[in-house]
Length: 121
Image 1 (cartoon, helix red, strand yellow):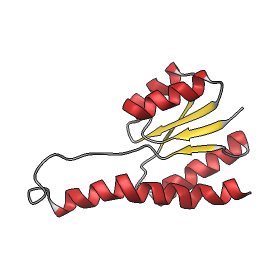
Image 2 (cartoon, helix red, strand yellow):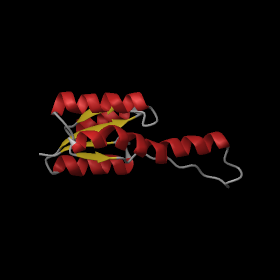
Image 3 (cartoon, rainbow, N blue to C red):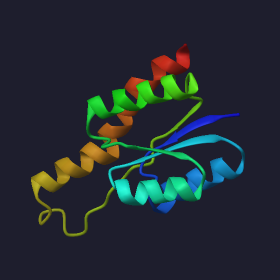
Image 4 (tube, rainbow, N blue to C red):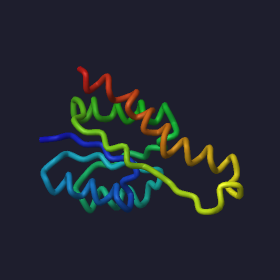
């Protein structure tokens, strides 16, 4: 049975992917910054939930500790969390661009940095 962690899994594409993995018999850990929605999504899929701010390296470490403690490892990491901002490029603030980059790009880097060594065993 596969052990799967999905980020941004409280809604949208992340929730749909988590549901598909669960339906296929995988053990699934849903993660999200939205604790209430994440817990509800996990309950609906008979899965686990862990709060995870993908911008936070320590939160990624806690997620790795969780999968090692509870499952003995991880088979699939789905770096799904993402955000969007609307507006003309010159109208979007530098702070918003930093926020977007932190979540859409650097979070995937952080997730891989934490979990790839576990995959390599």
